[in-house]
Length: 360
Image 1 (spheres, one colour):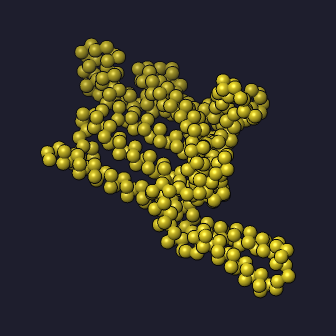
Image 2 (cartoon, helix red, strand yellow):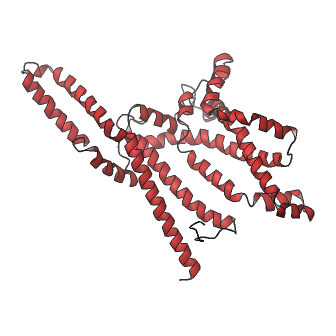
Image 3 (cartoon, helix red, strand yellow):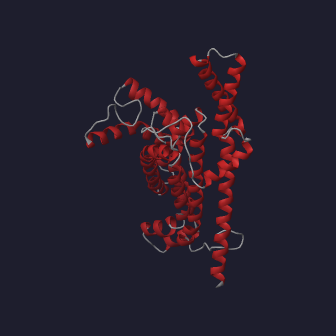
C-alpha cells in the first residue's frame, strides 16, 4: 500500500468513525429532549389513567361492583397498558432501545398523528409530507441561491455604485424571519386585496384537471416563496458580493488583469474557481436543509410539509415523529459532510486528503 493510499484510507476511517459518533450523540440528545428526559412518560401515564378510569367507571356491567374491585380492575388494566407500551421500564433503559431503533431507521408508529390514508407508520407520514416541503423550499431556495450568486458576482463588478449601495442599505431587512414577512403578506394580498389565498397548498376541492391543479399549487406558493425571499435575498447578495470582492483583490487577479485577460476569463478562472469549495458547501447544506422546512413558516401558511408536521408532533408530544425527523436529518448531514471532504479534494488542487492536522 502506497503512502498516499494509506493516508486516504486512514483519514476515511477516521472521518467515518467521528461522524458516526456525532450522529449517535446527536440522535440520543434528540431522544432525551423529545421525551423531556422522561417527563413525557408521566404525561402518557396520566392520559392512560384517565382513559382507563373513564372506561371502567362508564361500563354499566361493572357498576354494581364495590369500589375496591373497581380499583383492582383499573390497576390491572393500567399495568397491561403500561407493559404494552413499555412504560413499566425506566426511561433511561428504554432510551437506549429508542436509540437503536432510530439508528437502524426502525421509525415505528406515531402515537397521535396519522397519514391521510389513516396509517400511523412514521415512515409513511414523513413520505407523505416530504414532497410538499421539497416543492416549496426547493423551488424558493434554489432560485434564491443561484440568483444571489450571480447578482453578487454582478455587484462585485460595480463596487460603490447605486445598486451596490442599495443592497447594502436593504441588508438589515434580513434580520426579520420569513414568517414575519409572511404575516404581513397575508394581511396585504389575502385579506385586503384578496388576490392570493391565505394558505394551504391547493384550493378546496382540488381541481381534477392536471393543469388547473398545477396552477393552483403555484398560486398558493407565491406568498410563502416571497416571504422566504424577502427575509434572505439582500443578505445573501451582500454576502456573496463581499466574498467575490475579497477574492477579486488578490494579487494573482491583479496580475491577470495586468496581462490583459478578458474579464469573463478572470471571473471564471481566478475568482469563481477558488470560491468553488464555499459555493458547493452552501449549496450542499441548502439541499439537506430542505428536509426540515421551516416550522413556523409552514404553520403560518398552513403548508402541509415536514415543518408543520414537526410543529404538530411537538404539540402532541408525538416523540416517534420528532425523533424520526431528527435522525434522518442527522444521517443526511453526516453523509453530506463526508462527501464534501471528497469534493473539496476534487475541485481544489490545494486540498490534500489526510494532510497534517487532520484536515483535508
